[in-house]
Length: 389
Image (cartoon, rainbow, N blue to C red; front, side, top):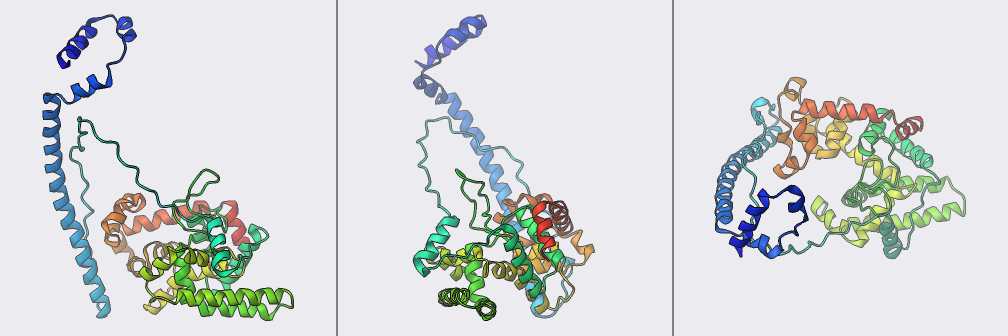
């Protein structure tokens, strides 16, 4: 059969194009048999060997590089704990190796159909609201419009000590300059799915909400009590009901040790989703969003960094975590020009982050962050937020 098929192809090669086009395609069984010919399999095995050897050499080089990144990070942390100055020698000053070898060849033999991997369905805004109703018998109080939420956010941010520039530029970077208070990352309307649970002006994740309610619960309750004192019945009774719900939420968030991993476990439950629904509430949401940034400001001050953070510096702490972000923020400009961004990532995170790998020094990463903030701050949503201060 294989010889017959090859002979047929040889004849077709000499025929006029019109005749060749009118002949039927080879049956799948014949095409598969040709793909599995000894010559095709031998070529595949040769290319596979080349790929495996090149890949193994690259992995050895990459493993050594990322091992050095880890050791340097440990060394920096130890020096900071000891009150010692961090210098250029405490960073890896080369960029990560890039694989440039041959691509993995395609196996020509028949392959079984891959089983579809079940895709984790992320909770969306309706799921969060339903969870709040089911677990806490509460529905977040949504704003009448976007401007109402922006004004509440501006009041909360200003009272917490954040500047208008910090709030507006971080909002511009996180949301593209036109984001709404209930915007979920990746969701573009019916028929689309979000890419994460991040919601709002500062794109809080479910774990952020659980952690903030656990750590800032007293401050959140104090703010609600202050509002209640200024109200008369029946609005005051409604606020008191909200305070009772928040107390239960705070108790739930504090039912586990105060660590990100433990809060993440709660955040992945429906009861944790209910806490995330409070990002949508006109009285609680602005405070949660504000505290997300304020914790970074307080962290920097506690570490002795008293200079006001620029919006780009605050965003670095927001994106990479306070400790890692402060490592970049406290770096003199001359060091920022030389230190690769790879020093502040795990390998997987760096390879999935085209912005950090393309703008591959601290100075470049901060510069491109500022550029995006400049552009997005001119959009209507950002202008409305600026006017709310």
